[in-house]
Structure formats: structure tokens, C-alpha cells
Image (cartoon, rainbow, N blue to C red; front, side):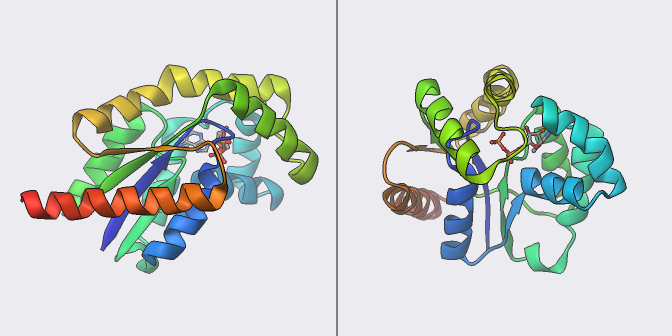
Length: 197
Ligand code: ADP
């Protein structure tokens, strides 16, 4: 039973690491960015509404995002655990998640923060733009996303740090090694908590 979050700036490799970590821990990765992108490409009502925010690098409004996550976290496959990727990104989202989990008698085990310097993030995004062609991978939109990360999501990171849940991992270097370091750090953290309690 493992409930994890992964938080990191745009271009930090959060999505890639989320997939690997979820595989290792045997839990589903739930990526809000991916759910939004899928809705945009299949032109659902949510997708049509969300597209304007994604394209500008802005956050989708909290009420839409919270509803989406609450809905997803009631599915059968996430009962035994999950890895949330890209949520919460704002303090109100974090509060909403707390309330929701508490109402079900659940709580988070650890929050993984993937760190990388801004200059490297921009380089990686430019590289990804050529390979994947994501609509929000342009320099201006990327800078907006990075700016929002520093202004809003950093607060969420501090909140989990204050609660003693944060496991910071260096996101620079070989992706496979980063995965191995993240797994080791999370396992150390979870086992260490077990010993203390
Ligand atoms: P990145 O971390 O590279 O920005 P994501 O795939 O996590 O990529 O998110 C892509 C976009 O999806 C965000 O820029 C935002 O518009 C939207 N989004 C994803 N998660 C959230 C969230 N928790 N709250 C608001 N908007 C979100």
C-alpha cells in the first residue's frame, strides 16, 4: 500500500520517472497533465475547456482539476495505492487532496521532489519539442510554466517539507540512475518511518 506524489518543474522528467516508479512499486501513475492532454485530443467537454489553459502554460482552474482527481481516485485500481504526477500544484489543491484522503482514512506516504536547474530544464524542453511536438513546449509557454512552478508549486513543496514527507532527488543525469536513486531514497524513507513509529 503506497501512496506517493511526484513534484518537479516542467522538463524535470517527472512523467518519465513517474512511469518507472509506478512500475517498481506496482501502483498506477495518475498524471493530471496526461489526462488533460488526452481530453484535449479527444475533444471532450473537459478537453475543450482545458485546452486554452494548457496552450498558454496556465494552470487549469482548481475546481476542474480537483473534480478530475477526486473522480480518478475513486477508481478501483487506485485503492491499493497510487503515484500522483502533476497534482497538487497549488496550495488549495493540496488542501483538497488532504481532505479527500482524510475522508477515506488515507494519507500520503512520501512526496518525491525532482530537482534540476532552470537552464537545464529549458534545454531539455527544446529537445523534447523536436521529438514529441507537445503543444505547450514553446519557449514562451515553457517560461510561463516554469514561472508558475516557482510562484505557486514551490509553496506546495514547502508544505510537504514542513510535514516531513519530502524526499528530494537530483533530477540531472542518466534517467535510469535517477530512477534507481529515487527508488532507494523512497524505500529508505518509508522504512525509516516504520522504524521510528
Ligand atoms: P509539465 O510539468 O511539463 O508542465 P504536465 O504534463 O504535468 O507538464 O502538465 C501540463 C499542463 O497541464 C500544465 O501546464 C497545466 O496546464 C495542466 N495541469 C496539469 N496538472 C495540473 C494541475 N494540478 N493543476 C492545474 N493545471 C494542471
